[in-house]
Length: 339
Image (cartoon, rainbow, N blue to C red; front, side, top):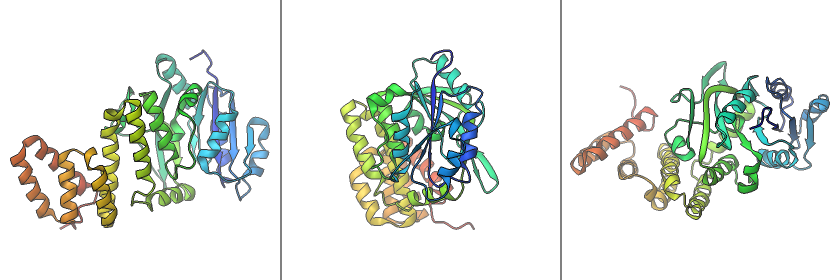
């Protein structure tokens, strides 16, 4: 990375009239000045475009003619960017002033890295918390392994990516409904597995009405209708790239969490289909736990019986099974009421 890296900031905006000025100012007021701040209005129906036109002299403003979602808007920004690095921010969020400088210094110290992210703060209802709690300082490693261990985040508002990466991996795919960000990062990790992470929170995600609506829409599809096609395409891509064994544990974790949600919501037909199709991704103790959940939903005695069977089969598996059952209970998925 050069002494003063050329960083293009890309901000998609949709009905962010009340928050877009805050987002843009946080990008413009960086201690490391970006080369440009590109704001793409995705056919807002409020006065977002008017707000942006009032500060047009400080930004590059792109007005989309058709609403295409955040992925399409980000792609317009990527195609228009002049910088060597892309850094993304959403229209209702913000950065701390040293965000770009700290990431640029980190990447300069680690020139082998072509992408990195940071921790961030989630603000909701007057409360705030960091997204990642397990990691201290800085971290480098294989993306899927770090994600599987819960050591990192790859929230879009924290990511910085070398422009050359898009030439190899492509852009966001807006047609990958609800998961275009995951899809891109998983594709990048297949070709450029080394990922850098800075634990210091450098961005703020404001969980307002728009953010909650987006999360609600994603959560409404707990039957896997959007997630599992992404899993399928990513598994195929992993095989083609020779990355299947690296991706498999992470994919298994994603599937496991989706199946736990199906148990909680009693989506048994979706659960059965997922069990038939993806059980090969899961360790045997997780397959056993999920099978018992299906046969005896929310039945703690049955779980204890399965645990005893696994004790006979092997201590290592039974210990993992016990940890997994504790996970289910801790996340409120056991269906047991407090005594």
